Length: 252
Image (spheres, rainbow, N blue to C red):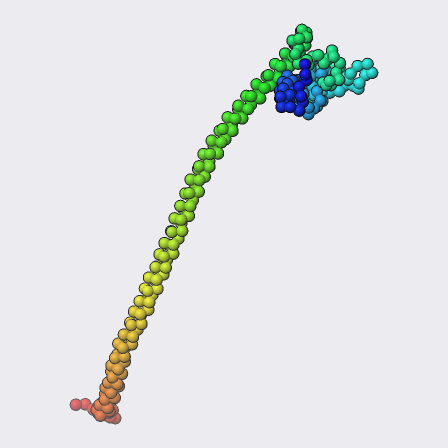
């Protein structure tokens, strides 16, 4: 059989699809505590002898590497001290076979149980995440509806504010006109009052001029009457008293 060409389109597509299938078959390999995935290649994962998988951030190293075996870790899931190895292609075959992509071909109950428990554990995690995503989607939809309602209310308030500002402007203009009209009326009233006071003062001046003449004539007449009275009194004979003669007593 001829090998497929790596540069051709027919050969590259099967390779990419098969690579995707292989990566998809490894999705169940994850940290039992923080759910970090092996396919992401962001952290190192360790397979412990207690059949638990933990990442380098979650696992605790109890002691250094022994000459005869792998590192000893403290499992945060079962709290046991277990030997562990990093999950990679350098693992021994008896350990690496636990992560076989087609475990059914191995016919091993321990391997099937290990992969099945990890699949269930990861499926529960996906269910929880799905519930959280649905809740977040509902919260986002609710927040979106609230924002849309607030946006409509804001637009209505903005239109109302514009109307009120125009109304306020008209009211200010009307108030200014009324104030100017009141000032004009007050000034006109003041002018009329001043004119009436001027006219009344001029009328009083004309009226007060006659009594002065009459008063002078009266004073003059009074003075003349007094003078005439004095003249008549001077002309009249003065009333004299009895002349007291010497007292000569006698009998009649």
